Length: 289
Picture 1 (cartoon, rainbow, N blue to C red):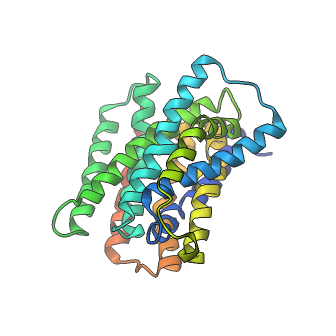
Picture 2: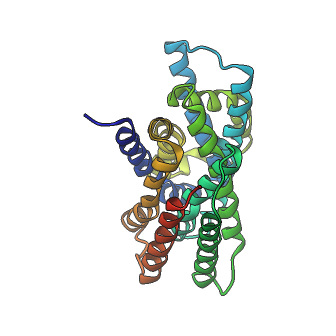
Picture 3: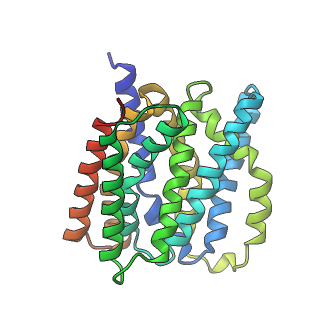
């Protein structure tokens, strides 16, 4: 019989598998759609699904304290991460973004340590700094001799996701994972409806099928269904343990970018992916005293 931790690891893996295609599909979508439309439209699409689900399930309303935590989650995963990723994917290859986002598990652990009163060791902080240096070095070498503004956007996306993941994972210990992401999307539904309409500044009939399908994926899977598995996995197995599954995401993104966009898997991509993986694994082992 599977233990709770093992169940959490498998659920977390399913969530990561879904999230790993977010960058390639976002890049396809923003090639024809405004990055702002993609950001707010994907959240609107997920929010409509969440509202329909609530009409059927009639869930209990969150407490005042839970509402406040849902606001934090929404700022991180409904707005922060999607917006800055969409802006970055206008020009950056999705394989590049996948490697840079490889530091996200470590960033999530840092936020969790600060937010939930843990006591990381000096070795943990050393690996956190080393991982950040590796990511910055990769961004510089793979760009035009320096860190591009788009890489800065990805760093903000990492910070946003780290906050949203750690807060959502913990809140999923009190509420179901489905309710956590659903309430975050329903809470922001009026704003997303208004802003999606505001940025609907293109001819819908001129948008290609791949762009539409990519938008549907990031709205239904990346923004909504993926969190069912991810938050539930974090709640069952713990943020620290299940967060390690996310180490696979850069590799899965590289493969997705290769098949969906024809982006080459270079030796430098693989080398830095392995380096970031090694540092983050080390960081997890020295996570706290």
